[in-house]
Structures are given as structure tokens and as C-alpha cells.
Amino acid sequence: MQLEKKVLLLGIYTKEDDETIQEVLLKLEETGMFTLKEAKKLLKELKEEGYMEGSQLTLKGFDKGKEVAEEFKI
Image (cartoon, rainbow, N blue to C red; front, side, top):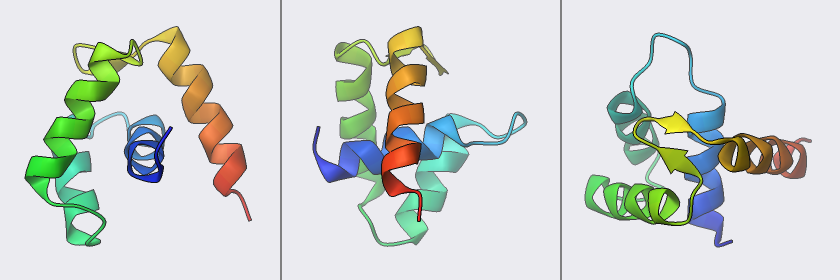
């Protein structure tokens, strides 16, 4: 999995309960990691790969998010 997808998945995995996916995308855009257009493309890819369904992580997405969180843990 490419780094940008991991960062997006991590952002979704760690989002607050009251945060929307759109807010996560905007927050990541502000960091300069990628543009909103790129983030939406990556989000679509995550959905196509079975990591998300609608605006929720699937079990596969949750497990991968947990794995990515451990990978980026300092």
C-alpha cells in the first residue's frame, strides 16, 4: 500500500466520532500531504479495495488502520 493511502487510512481510523470524512480530507489537505482532489481519488481507491463502505471502515479497513497506526507509532 502506498504511503498516501496509509496516511489517509490512518486519518480515517483515528478520526473523532463527530468528524466527517470530508473534514478528515480537508485536515489532511492542510498538512500539504496531498490536494483535496488527490485525497478523493485515494478515498475512492480505498472503497474499491474493500477498506471502506460508504463513510465507514470495513473490518478489513479497521484492521489495516490498526496495522498502519502501529507502523507509524514512534
